[in-house]
Length: 284
Image (tube, rainbow, N blue to C red; front, side, top):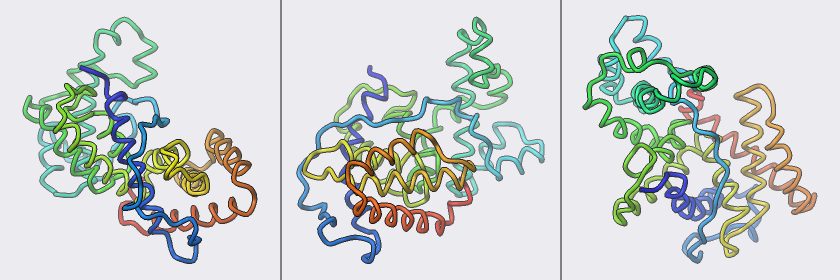
């Protein structure tokens, strides 16, 4: 059994290939001929690590609008999860997953929370009785089904959650080759969907692969396009830029030079415009 961050490095390989495909779909006017790459001509990329946010308490990021409406109806947690999943809406599926994931998080960290008051505050931990309510064992065991549907659609936040859960959930894997391979292919497509919807984690992962991936497809100008898009989306969603992303942009700008940087930033703006046109943009 190995932790998910080790397993998902393999999905970073798939992300490298996907990143090149996504980038090649930028509008013709923004993509110089010399920068356009054919996915079919790429060699197999090397394993690369990428930055990721610390895994927050699953329910801490906020509750979606469908879930809030159902809470007003005073549904039990079990009924709320069932109702959300029956809608067929990927945003609602992610909301259902977060309810169940909060329960799993509470149970997993109960011993630590009872001995560390700071953890309770920092991670917004609540007791299993409060977090789980009347959720059934079946709802808990099947939580990956709803999450998978949400991540397949690229619902922001769900792609990272799917990555952290791993092929078998709970952030662990027995390294069944067939299972991991299928999961990596699915995760690759999910990152593409997430990027098209403006999911910052997906965009950051793809940017890192362009910066640190296999030399055959490494392209700092393309990495800068994704990083600049990430920063613009951060400002739109959070109201202020991320200093770390700003440093990333400055470093890449110095490396590629002013002319290429100008092209990359324009491409990033077009990526953001495409994301804002997505029906899932409102779910940020």
